[in-house]
Amino acid sequence: MGEDTAFLVSACLLGVTCAYDGGARLQPELITLMAQGRVVPVCPEVAGGLLVPRPPAEIVSGDGDNVLDGQARVMTITGENVTAAYLRGAECALTAARRYGISTAILKQCSPSCGVSRIYDGTHSGRLVVGQGVTAALLRRQGMTVWSEEDRIRLLSLIQRPDLTGF
Ligand code: SF4
Image (cartoon, rainbow, N blue to C red; front, top):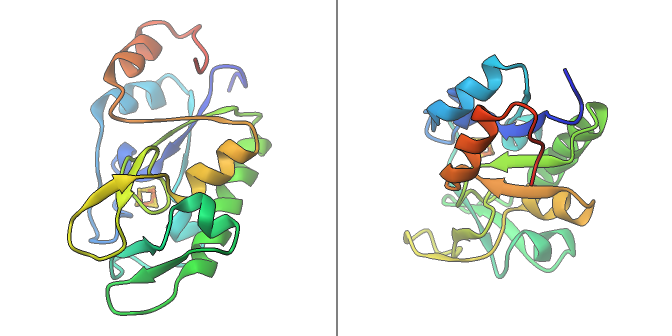
């Protein structure tokens, strides 16, 4: 795998059934990127020790940055504090990126782990707010570029130009 053209990618976007509800969030363009040998899949929540399926969780009182700073927590809809698992999962994602010399991640928008610019507001009522997930925040703090599956123009550019790195 060429380290300059590989990407860390949310595993659910590659069809892995690791989402909280036991489903995947397949993004077909990313399958093409994977077939080109340019993808390292990661599911931070499973890597952090959570099961599939699992109760949905949201960040309460902030976003991933605040969780890293100990100022917010991740709570399931059933009232369990799963912050530690989210922090462990973020560290696992960072370790994988470093292992493969990866500097760009493509993560699933709106997730409390992987959300890039929007997350749910912590009330489990379906409302979105501006913010990022715990893994996205940690990767950015470590200097990585993070973008989401919603940026389809960039995705298509990557597939059509295997020489392109994160940009
Ligand atoms: Fe997908 Fe990330 Fe949630 Fe795992 S933690 S299911 S990779 S969005």
